[in-house]
Image (cartoon, rainbow, N blue to C red; front, side, top):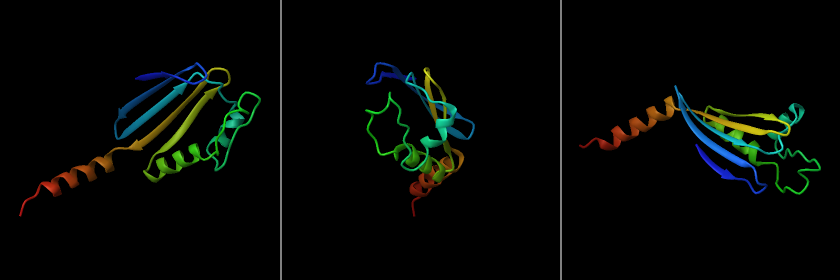
Length: 114
């Protein structure tokens, strides 16, 4: 697990897990957290959550939308769990089986000699 400090003083932790058939990246923060009703807005194109606490945070609202679309194009997904005042955990899951099969095939194909 890797830990670092956010610009607002909280801790951010990143962890990569290899699960049967999946790779998962979890990113946890000790930030503001979100209300359940706000979570759907996170993954919408140009979706932004603006509150008194976040008004000074700049962004286009595309980052999480693009992250989810990319994960889904690879057969995975990105999800979030959040609690107001406690922070959030974002999890990105990507399947390994097909990817590993393609890598192994490519290695074997490149290793063949005439």
